[in-house]
Amino acid sequence: MYKVGSFLEKDVAKLVAFMQAHPFAVLIGTHQNVPFATQVPLQIKKDGDTVKLIGHVMRKTDHHYAFMANENVLALFHGAHAYVSASVYENPASASTWNYSSVQAKGKIKLLGNEETMIAIKELTEQYETKDSPAAFHQMSAKYINQHLKAIVGFEITLTSLEGVFKLSQNHSRTNRESIVQHLSQSDDRQAQEVAKQMKGDL
Image (cartoon, rainbow, N blue to C red; front, side, top):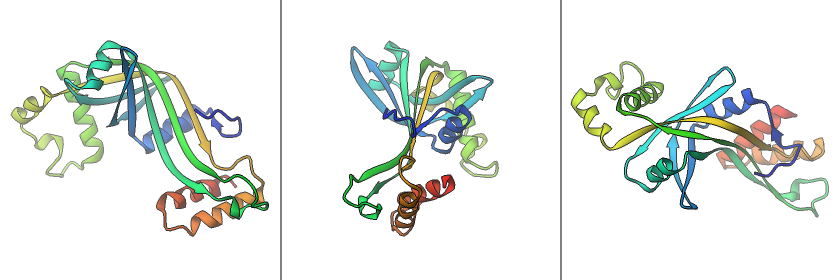
């Protein structure tokens, strides 16, 4: 992680809110010094000072075996990002850059049993489906659920470290930042527009 003081975010509440707003994360584990990664939707839960990530993966995959072998994992959460051209700076003969928001969450993973895995799937589904949706959890038959549970395993990660970098040109003058916001706001790239929105909120 690019740990420059002006970009670091240490407020746990803000970091948790960011993860909750961007729950589709890259989860990384290692087995015999080889890294394995998978993209997974996660539930982020905070209980007092403890933050936990809940999710599930397919069984008998490289990442499943890695999680079985080594409890230490890293989850990467990404927000909007955009190229920032120095052409919009007060002094355009400068280095261009890339603005982005990212949170790294390290922790210990615990694989769950069938009952706990079913609860994790139920809670995740109910987070995104309305009660009257034909795809709601209660619309699925017990037979269907049990068949699919055989192919997946839930997990719970208790975080031991939480770090965030929100790199939004904080190290630039207000004039430069306002110019960057104007430039990104006019872009056709939705991510650039989102970065501009974030930067504008900090001005």
